[in-house]
Image (cartoon, rainbow, N blue to C red; front, side, top):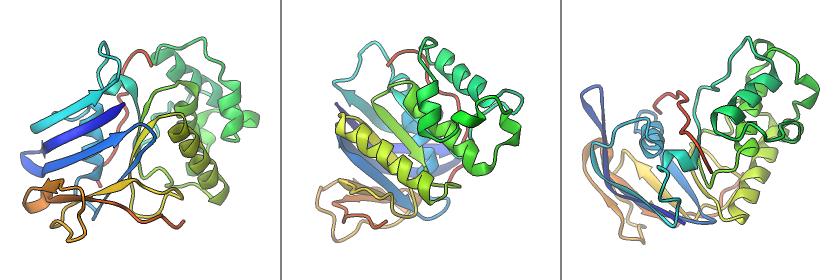
Length: 241
């Protein structure tokens, strides 16, 4: 499987967010999306999943399911946690299992993996920010989809939860999955390459991708080691960063 963007452009609110963005991520690869606040990292992920209209360029998925859109083969974890406060932890995850077309999936194990099994009957309104984030992460585990689109995935997580998410990501990549992650810091995993938004191409660029101008200028470079399917697409919100 290979997810490819060619000269991708995005416009929101009548302004150009980015343009000329190109990248490629194959099975087993992590692509880190970087840039200053407002450069369009969140908008890029939302464009890939289909929540924002493509203003220019092309997105393509090779060796995916030809009967499904890219969004229907992807999990999108945005800034907002997409939880219903009045529903319990268990009911929220069951909702997503049903919505994504796998209602028969067992949700006990994913809840246990994110450390929320003992809170399964607690209304989501009583969860802390980190617990809400962990419940959203459980959605990645309860339904198998090959592409993960993660927007600041370590946000609000404590050290133990960050390590758990890193382990989930490592397992997903080892199984042939693809991850695009917008981040300002490290993810605890080596990135095959990086895409930078909102700055001029780097002299270190080795792939020949990128270009563009203005806020959309981008480059894709080999990254150093970082320090520290069925059904519907997910209509979950997120803020631009």
